[in-house]
Image (tube, rainbow, N blue to C red; front, side, top):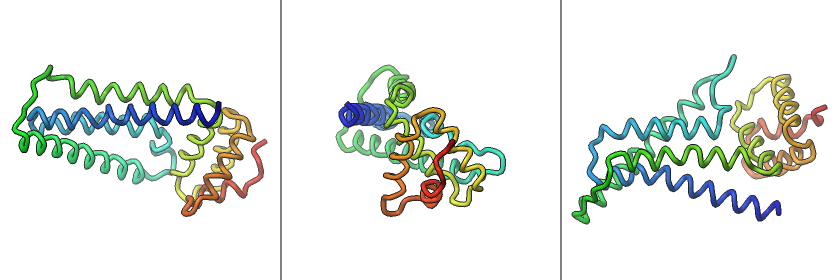
Length: 188
């Protein structure tokens, strides 16, 4: 059930992502003005923060990772919106629908994605936690890294966490923080 469930959840997350991107694409296709881009950028920003809450800068952490991910999201919104405008212009089609439909589609992606993550089985949760840990700075102090590992071990079984950490740290180009965490003794 583990592999099958993970694949099902990955498809659900892909569907939520498709909803997220369909909003600015449809808005561009329908000829909405560029003033709609900040609305979608805010939704995309919520997407990043809701799926990666560890990006919020904490005590002594830099806001650069969050700001860089948000900047990428604004770029993705602008590109999606621009593609929609281009398709509408080339095809000469301007669909008409309720004005809030594109925003509602993008916003609907947020709770769907959260449901996928919050109801995930333990192996997927361990993998998600390790992925979040991989976003931390490479020079995260050892005591804080150990505290995070201990907190993660309270949520998922230590063997599932250790397996997820081993797999992620063994991948080529794995973040240094994951390799450091892998070398640490198991959390008590």
